[in-house]
Image (cartoon, rainbow, N blue to C red; front, side):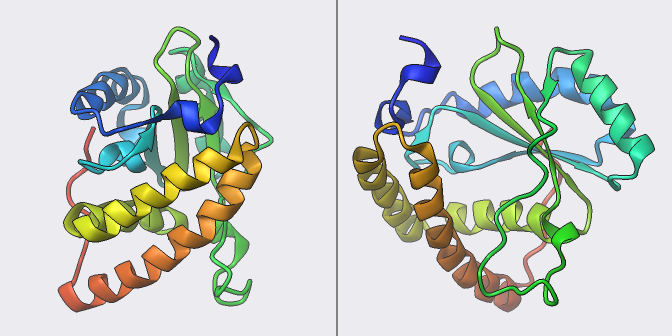
Length: 204
């Protein structure tokens, strides 16, 4: 059965210990191709949290200095050189509802998104700019769940139940999951303020 015909529930998997190693194998050629253009290459998303139920897709976040046209042109050329395809129609992330445009301007949620090579295991490649809210969101969300197993377990159960009712409607799955992530992030922000959280070293 092709990946496109799988329901959301069929894509779900219990945590697989090999996921970090698969990220490392994906990140290595990416690092070689991008060089200093990639300020960070990080394993993000549910496959980056030990014990968490996840869709069997490796989420990768590449951090670049900016989205200046010259930087984007180099980024696209470098990634296309190793088989990735730029999705020019994907230009931003979900913005949490408590943030108005004045609180968090749209550039804070700008990104570039790439499809992985056809022969590669399912991968989502998100490129975000240093200092932007969406880059921080991905790393803080991951680190909070890594250190709060009860929150991770509750989030995993929510995803299982939501996937069971979503069927092939991936938009409904994402549209419902995003506000739950925002609730988790609110707790994560309190934790970050209390502990002085900062992102650790780049994963790749």
